[in-house]
Length: 464
Image 1: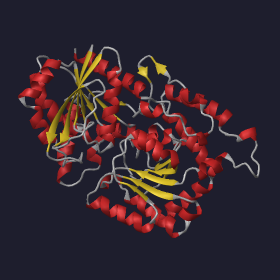
Image 2: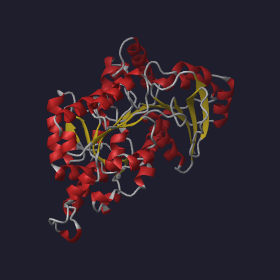
Image 3: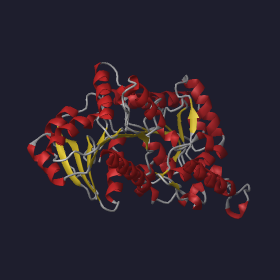
Image 4: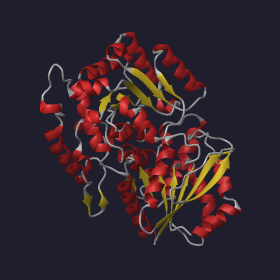
């Protein structure tokens, strides 16, 4: 029996970022495994009246006075203080976990607060959803870097979302990197998976037949192979390539395109009027790059020529976010602003199924879950081209035409010209859309959970 204590600052109460969405995904999939029980310890904002979901797990929520941030200003100290309370410690002791998974540096103090309540020593696994020391600045950098280093030191294993984050932690954060005698615990790459509720949605009909999206993931003796470049992933790519070579033509009815019968690329274009950006409106997500692109496309008439409507999805409403929204509306008055948090299914059906091109503007993102969610609905994404910049490019690979890489730090006129060239090539956009959908739907929550359980078993065995 695996009894998992799962500690995360953000979970299902007042979710505001991809961290909360991914935490929910992992908990839900873990609870579906046989002989596995989960206790979630999370925070929630004071006065929150909405209901919280636990998906079969036990849930302990602790109120905190600050909310909406995961950087050094996050309420990690309040969370830890309340986690050390007698009631919480008693409930954790009664659950009697066999392992602890804690999310990001902000959960380490909470784990240390509850650990003394346990009568036996158990391994802890550091689930790094984002390397905050890559983006934190000022006084917060020292705090975040210290707690990330301690999280690696005090864990039996570290799990990250991309090869780039693994390399950065090992080379720049881990204290063992500077010590010949230091012993480094394993650092695993586990790519984010598409949520089951999205995988069950039928792909939009404008993608054509995608019968082969049910391709089963490859397995190896050490569990699921999910990392880019692995033998299992290479085999999966080969299978997808074979199927795509037989079906990517997407023929229209009768197999011929006539003057009265629009091509599949034309159908895709006319049914998808959105140029979308879906990120948290925070400085580290760099939404201003999307706005600058829209400004240039509006200036040169490309938005009108291609029949595109900019869509910005972002629930944040601080002064920075409001400035971004005002600037977008000024450049494109008919743009659509969605200022509430949208769940993955709502986002998929209302936005991504109508998106011709999704722009993920940041020059660094640990993963970028919305890229995969967009892909599942056939919305191809542009991401920054620097190697390792965006973790989702470990799953959706540019070499297989599953994502488009561009230098998003380029001057707006240069970037806009590249985007226009892509928009002009309807066949290429449709190809990327279809291949992205295949890839996104091939790596599921259930497979992610099995790989995570394999890591848990390794950590438990090593600590026994």
